[in-house]
Image 1 (cartoon, protein in one colour):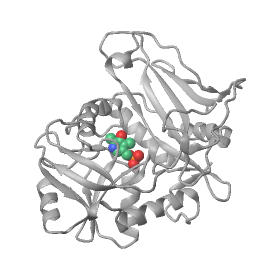
Image 2 (cartoon, rainbow, N blue to C red):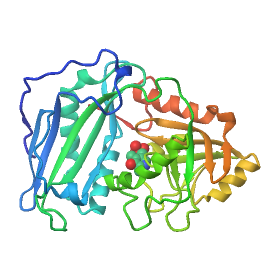
Image 3 (cartoon, rainbow, N blue to C red):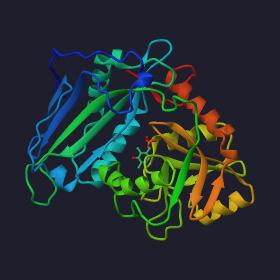
Image 4 (cartoon, rainbow, N blue to C red):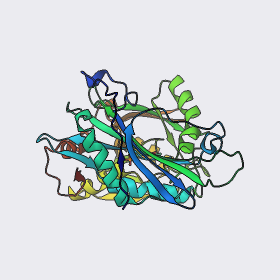
Length: 355
Ligand SMILES: *Cc1c(COP(=O)(O)O)cnc(C)c1O
């Protein structure tokens, strides 16, 4: 196992006094982790050093061809002072799944987990302790050839940066309005939808802008071939409560295997709910709305944990869910998962890893 080089920073920053004033993703801790990949040497130079700008060639292959992947997870300081990370191995294993899809060299998950824990331990004073706040962890890999030739790169960089974030719902657990996208498509089976890669975000930005102009927060994607089956919400998976059952689109090959999605399904099963992962068409959803069996709609993702949906717009059909108010299951699930993360609820699932 390689030794991680530690370079002490002389420029330690002020930590925020009021985390609720910090905009998501704009503030970073003092240190970052990085290592390089070279074709003949594998992953080398693991280093923890000051968070700072990095030199980049104008011909950097990622800038031109986008061979890059990332993860997003969170560290917490629990009520009894433990430092924990939520499902770190699931996230790092998914990073390797994304790596395989984009022909990026895989990482040694155990080595990177140790490096991540070391970084979080060094930066533990950056973990905000306000309710719902956490230290967001962003591992990412990008191709690092200085070469405009189109090919799989020979050099890569892996980095982990840390960003203290406040509770997603600073103004209370509020439902969002979502527009079902029937023109643009984000991903198709056989494409990149299963990978956590910048390309999927690039493909989603324009539709997001249009949705914003119409007064909607986010876009719900339909399958790219028929524009009929429900996929996911760009940075969240989507779940429904229909006639008492928890229903979510099956992992079709074009949506992300979300770790919060998986967490919700495991917990729902343990509570005795029937859980269905299957194809669900937008027409079926409209029917369920019309006959009153669509009880709840909510998104799942690391950033928000659970995001209740108060309204769905499909073409001209406006579906107001539960009078636009937060519903019971979504709220109970949100409270349960955040209690596991804050250490106020005992973790019988093995989700919480102690640093
Ligand atoms: C990250 C992400 C999600 C949510 O996944 P989690 O593992 O729950 O954070 C959902 N969809 C896409 C496209 C994503 O990139």
